[in-house]
Image 1: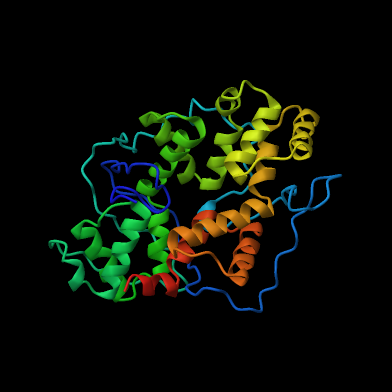
Image 2: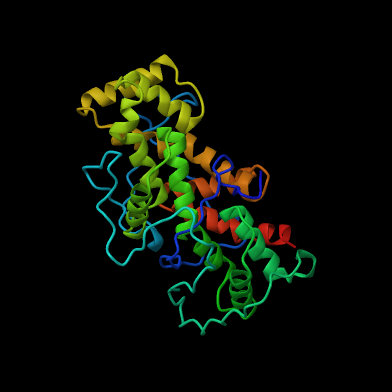
Length: 344
């Protein structure tokens, strides 16, 4: 992986952030140890599609989730999902244009929800050159790894000083800092670009990236946005609007395998029975136990560089099934003691 690529988007070159401060949503604390206590019961098996047995070869229908963590906002997606393009309405006047060539800016103070008491005043970062890695403190090494693994770049001096100083004095926890990086405009923009390139096969416009950043700031999660890409008319048109080809691509791009004829036929029948409701089918794939296990394994591989143990895999799959967002799953693993020790 090159210095310009993050652990989460190895095939996508890094974008420069917009020339505005990065806005971060409300932050909640996340666990710092992996795996979780053994007392957690394993999740129930995913519900199978009607009339289809629960086997390794058939994914189940999704269990509707009615609540999400604070960082995700409302959990009920809009009924009429916009096609791509165009993206959502133009951003409000307060948003500056997103540019790919803006100079790098350091992170700005996040709006931390008091948990439970008011947070102390953050320590202002001194303007000093970035110290050589061999002379970094433990907090500085942790922040440096976040910049490299999440944003795919080296830290700027002021950003490194800001985050590490506030970690040292206890203003922010590791979970809050990790969540701030995962919720930053810079990380989200890189993720949106990767969706356009990998799902739609093209590079987005500035307006398209800004439109989806507005969607995320308005309460949608990255999972919601990814589902919108797969359910879009543009993705459907890439495969001649053929239902069987559409379902086949979901097996390939979402589950990473080829669907059996029986599996493809099942979902084609679902499309026909629901008047072509592609979003229903996409959610069926992306909330299946098969997909969630693959997602958790991917986070472990990107962050901890190892596969999950069975207890950790089952714990995080159950959390995701219960409504934990992919962003907060990733922030929790980044905040873990294991990742912190790796940065030492």
